[in-house]
Image (cartoon, rainbow, N blue to C red; front, side, top):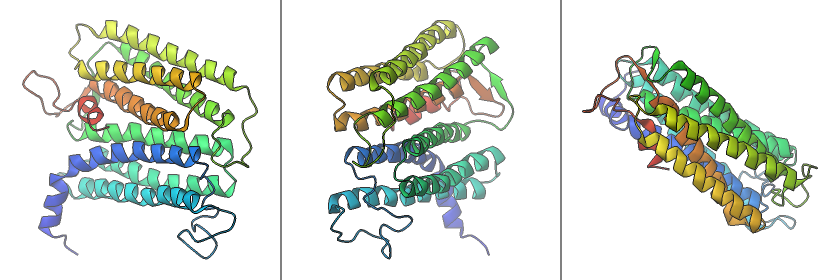
Length: 319
């Protein structure tokens, strides 16, 4: 079965747009998930994959408010939207000529991640929103955001082995920084799990002091920021775009300030969702800085001799 030329031309023309869209979608669905949580709508659809037994969509129910049903159902529906965008990324990578294995793999990661998240989301609902299942759900979203940034970057790179643009010691620092970011995100889910926003009033909470968990979260943020400052000094004199670095500094400082306001004001609902949005922005900016310190043979160059694909600048401007 042949594919119409207009369709392959469409996929080729908008391939980069699809990749940027999947970054936004993967981060955005984490934000809508936080809205489900702060509105207490986590069990608005108490079954999965149906909303109620015998109905895929919300129905009038004496024990579940319509608002909760539609908030949760809306988040489930958005999973389908993310899936369509991820599928377009896969099709664009597959039909592009020459077909590039790395781009195909990164696109498949996005689509497979959507499927995995649907299963994890269903498990979360069926277990009554156990706090650790919600944490896993969020962390997988952030991991998919990271790989989505790599997908955007790959479209402007070659397919050869990555060549460092900075000393290997700085690459190791970035690895430690990425691990610290993972721990920072994990600690953030602990704070939420022990805090007031459970997703449902009957959901058991993480039985640990919120103040202690918040301090751990803050300490990891300071550690991350300290490494970022050190990295900024070390990057001087190396042929690395500066915008991804400054973007990361900006979003980290903004996220830290937002976290302090949350703590001082008793964790209001709207700030929770903004903080989740900020977490996604930090992941995007960190991944963008990561790709900016490496290049692959065959990548296009801009007028200054740097890679034309500085994913951080491009992606961060769309988030």
